[in-house]
Length: 483
Image 1: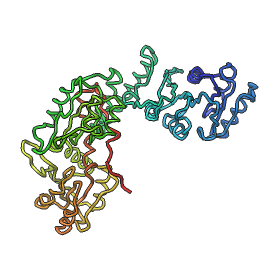
Image 2 (image 1 turned 60 degrees about the horizontal axis):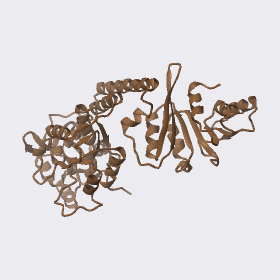
Image 3 (image 1 turned 90 degrees about the horizontal axis):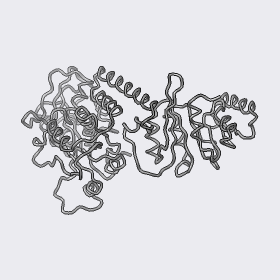
Image 4 (image 1 turned 90 degrees about the vertical axis):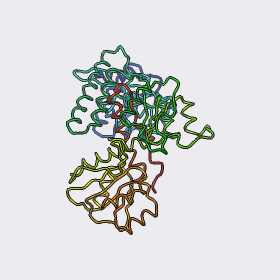
């Protein structure tokens, strides 16, 4: 009656109470659970009338109408969970399963087992389960014809473990399971194909990331000495070019001075350290220094205290990252060049010597309307809003930009005959000055003009150390919200 994937789902059902089959289709699973004696009662549900009719015919055929309750329900919406020990959701995409589970608050802190069989996006489902404080207690691969299917059992754990991208892809299969090895091999091939396609499309950063994921899925995550990572980053973004007032470098060490997982963030904050703890990162790399001014004391609420307490090291790359070729401003230049053709080669905005610079000046081949240009910047920097002065140019051809807080550089932009200047953290008097001197000024936010460099840092590290898990922090968020 059952195909191999549904047989595995039936095997994972505990039989300790009522089982629910969500999206039952023909109620074959429900009939199997009753006829085998594993369950005394099953709830079979579907959102569509057609499958419910087929389910009704099945239970009538096997004379089990008194033991199978057929319910029309959108996911778990109309399912009474009293006495339920197992919920089976099979034959749907992983994202659809997540949507169903997310809508049911009663699952939190319950003892209900979730038997899940995603047809696609298994990694999305795994990540959601751990983000929601569930844990996968069993996971197997089932072969049916030429296809492989994932079946997993998850239970509420209350633990604050969070999966990295590689862990979510890898799954929780037995190491000696030949089908699991076949499944992972297929995933490696898929990831490499994606990487190749991205490379052909000119998406280097994304291509390198998928290639590194494939490497880790095939070879596993491995440790690297933190000094080796720091020395390599120092070659790419030399610390000695930082501004005199800055404090970039290795600011906090961990005990072993090794790591297998790195969390990247614009700022090292208590939430970002918590994320690093949950994902098992032994090193954090940030743009803004976690130690900037001299510390007279370290309190328990201090990020420095939390790093030391959690044995997490910290490397901070601030103005050296802004100045270095391919750093923060280099990423902005690349993104702009993907949208516009330039009249000439971009030139340094502020020359810092030794081949380094803060910002760039670009000249477009054709003028562009200021409003259209502003919308593009909003898209590039992924920011909620952009501030623009009232009395600037209506058309833009030559413009300068500098990431972070560059309002003090407005005079330089004017002296270099720019129609517009792009930066963040602009003060009131600078807005007035821009209006008086008729230059268009865009404030795209300190956070937004710098956070975009994190993907580039991940790419740089993954090219050299594909065995490391590099996590772009989900908690690397704009510190303010906009009402």
